Length: 449
Ligand code: GLU
Ligand code: MG
Image (cartoon, rainbow, N blue to C red; front, side, top):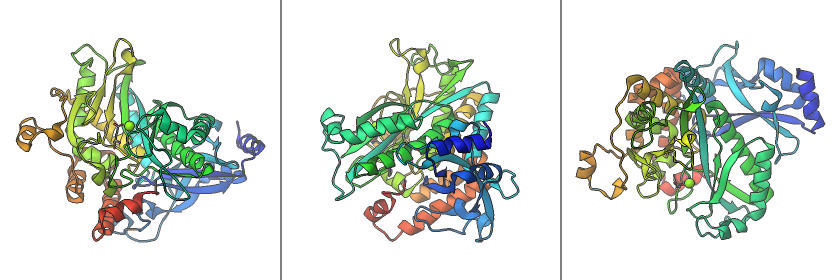
């Protein structure tokens, strides 16, 4: 399909504008909308956006603390990624608008070191070079309230049909809109927290999984708005309740067959063992990218299934790394690894990139896997955890920052420039939070994702 055929087919569907979305270093989806007739030009030349989006913080402040982007000068091009016509999605919930995911390139068209999408693409290529195809999918938890008065949209109980009946019209619209927008989900349910709901996206290739997560957010927000509801994807909507985890599931296939599955006592292959060992080894650095915000640090509490401690277990929901094994019922393709310490404030492209890289490193090094832990280690005393080699993951900015800058893995995957910008964003968020209460910090993050 050529440019003009694509534009006419979009116009036939009454599309007036194409929104080009990308995710910044705070997990915020930023966008530009072009009139539909300008799409071909945008695909060829991009639209201009400031270079300092890489150093926007969670409060729309711009930090100039990162050396590479220390002035307001500079422009980059945002290019809608349109490899096939289906990459431009007329939005079911926003008649007249279509969606495309964006890539940032330098003004001369060369790669822009701060482009998060390219970071993930590099890890996908690296996996392919090692003979692996990666599959990934996010679970998305959210809290839904009434727009008019902020009251809960459902009354529970957790996981109940009663709860979902309270938001029946929204649910039906959401299921229809997700399908119309080409997003496949495994399931939807009322989650444990107050007025919480979860959808689980079906597994896809990593870049496609990140793209789907971004489009799912847009789809969910629109469906909610239509029904007078408002959705918070924030890692911790309020101190009182459960957090919103966006758990990240990954698996590897070789020659079309799940490469994690094997015949050790946990149903793992050597590759599967090394993959998990690689993830566990790098957890402090990984979670500084996959759950990076002030809200993420507050979400990271034992007893909430949010991955507060750095260990792995088989189906252990308190573990930061949960093995989801195959079974005779589920079949050998089912094996996957869930990272609990991931949330909406992560850039999904970066989150996937560091996760995949850590697993591939584990395989490359033949990293030995420790025994799984099946208990809630939050109930253990410090000595017992120490003896088992289990540390709490960071809960302060200082610890998390130190883990970020000292992780060779994160530096290699993001590159010095993007890492520098990412750290500057975290520092700016911390400076904003310094003289404010936890409640005020959470309030400031509640609606931004
Ligand atoms: N809401 C929990 C979190 O913050 C997760 C609950 C679950 O395991 O589904 O991650
Ligand atoms: Mg859940």
